Image (cartoon, rainbow, N blue to C red):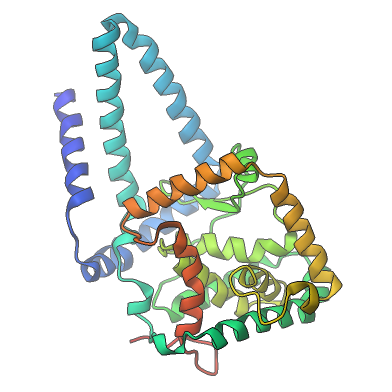
Amino acid sequence: MKRAAWMAAFAIALIAALLPLPPAAVERWYSHGIFPPLQRVLTAVSNLVPFALFDVLWIGGAAAAGVLVYRSRAYGWKKGTLHVATVLACVAAASYLAFLAAWGLNYRRLPLSDKVVFEEERITAEAHAALGDRAVATLNAEYVRAHERPLDRDRLLAAFQDAHRVLGGSPIVPGVPKPTLLGWYFHKASIAGMTNPFLLETLLAPDLLDVELPFVIAHEWAHLAGYADESEANFVAYLTCQRADAGARYSAALMLIGYAPGTRPLKDSLDIGPKIDLVAIRTRYAQTSGVLRFAARESYDRYLKANRVEKGIESYDAVVQLILGTPLDAAGNPRLR
């Protein structure tokens, strides 16, 4: 009976991976139906624990795999290897189903560009350069205020809830940012943050600058709200930071100059303050591992493509297209279709 249950889970997972689901149906029944109350429960529970539950998952999984391999020696080399492979395949299938139910189906919802008024003709080289120039101007203008006060998480949350509401979403329970035992890996692989897709908690790298935190946290909250696509999470974080305080606007501008540096070289256009922050970021990057960065990038690229994000890791860059192609009203709100 137990074996039959595992095989059924494997078959269901295979069907779930291959079955084409109408994005409009996923949007209505899952992303706006089942998922919001599920998110509020899972994140509220995970917030009660001061450490990263994701660490419990991966450490427990590694330990269980080790025990499985050890006990499988009794079957002999061939049967033991087959037993381990079978069990791991079934566990992977069950984990995939849990992933889809808890968060992963959001990859199959309607793209944000289909829900807002999106005008491709607005995306020009001139507009791209102008966006970069505005980011540079923000960095120069907001440097002092961005560094004189610590992160106001309540104000950031209010701005996030407003941006999410404008896009048609309901309030979320924000994840309390947590450190993780994978912090060393985050540093070496140049990963800023992560959303636990099973228990919906927010994990941050240990070496982020204070001025980087507002955008990174808003980005991870966007994932918690169901914006699985990276460009969409970046777009929601951008809208959030524009509505919050000077530190948040500065944080968003730091992100933007990586995609839209402006019409002049940064060494000529930035004041000394923002240059110091960029030096700190570049110094941290110089301490990362090229091998781990490449491995993390390739792995995440395959993960995204497996979840039907055609552009893979390049989807991060598409935030500029969303920003340029989405006209905003006087209040800074995108119009919905």
